[in-house]
Length: 565
Image (cartoon, rainbow, N blue to C red; front, top):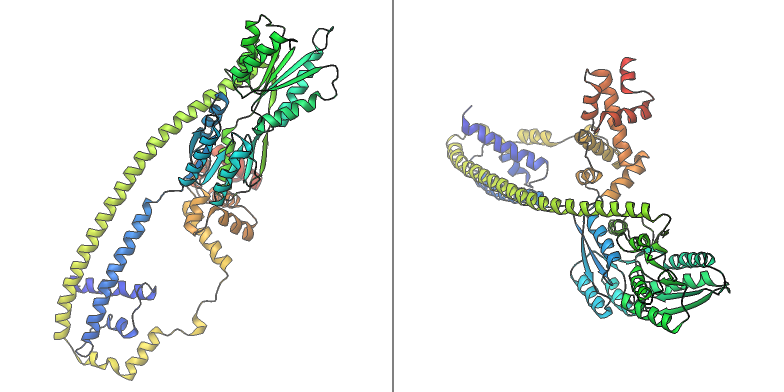
């Protein structure tokens, strides 16, 4: 067969498929003429068809380039802005935990942290700046409850979810809260203070001094509330409360004045361990060390825990950080997953009896967290390099495809011109019979399909199940297959895929995938000579041991037992 004829037939076949698939819309005579050699009467029509075909080739090229460019798209990375009211070891620990958790969950997040250093006006400015920078969600620990409320309202007006962390502003217009219970922390330390007072030598009425944080903040208000409630009804104790500003310097001055003016406090409770260091300094300077029992809140390794080990404090309350839970809550909100609006984390009292084991565990957790941050930094560097290489590869592929299409179009144009000349010279009577009734009926028969021969319509659930089955079997051998990838292939989001599969099968996508893998493995065990390990890897299990466990749960036998039977 001559090369030009082969190319012409290939071009006609492409046009035929394009029309049948409705990729190109042509009037009926144009389409028919593309399959038959035109005569003089229809030459203009054929030429118009070829011109339109060239335009459609250009449209096809544009669509192909658009498809290739979509290969450069990436999974969304949610931007989480964090506004911290102040600095300090406790908040630094929270920050490091949030940074370490950026890539810990199914969806990645990028955490940006701003610190107000106990300056309310600065925090308001930082909140407005974060909201205008395009963040998807705001996490905020308000420095003061009332002044921050207006800034929070502006953020909510922009449609940005807001998570209160550790403390709240004076507005209920927020998405969720997560943190320890300051009331419980104060109440627990109040009970501990009463217990400590009972162990003091008898002969005088013990004095308990509470040094609060700034009472304009919700943590100070709530910790004072819990502590004072715990001391109610204990008439055998003297109780004094003085307000500070969360700083060790202010706590030092208050304690020094109390010791000098008398009476000497037996127990001093500070709202954080940082203030407790100021109290200890005053006690040492006045020579009353050992007579004043100091306790605080935060319980960090290297700070409150260490003070208890050294004997500077009789106890501390571990106020939970759990920055990774903050990131998890934020991702659940952003991805539409279920979440609780109020999320309270539990703390505990650490005394000299159990401080060593708590310190050991705490330091190990902090070391692991630092390792996670290092790994994350290296991972991000690798991802940047991968992204660059990926874009270069896609660009190269686009250039190659464009060149191939351009050459093909030039070759096509050449052969069209040559065939047009030949067709004008080889007209015959058979072409002239095109418009006869007989041929018209023949053409009609070609394109007419009786209604009885048309396939019966099928339900949408059946069509979806077939597509899902095909997608799962296509990717079954991939042990790292994610539901998001199945959803992308089916044109559904993760939540939509879950609901659809659950509604028609009664199983979750993960359960259905595992069942189909086990069914395929069952068939291979009975119809192939492959080993159990080979079959496990072929159907998508990472390890033969886990495959055997799942197989026995499904069929009541181990794979080898089934093969032997």
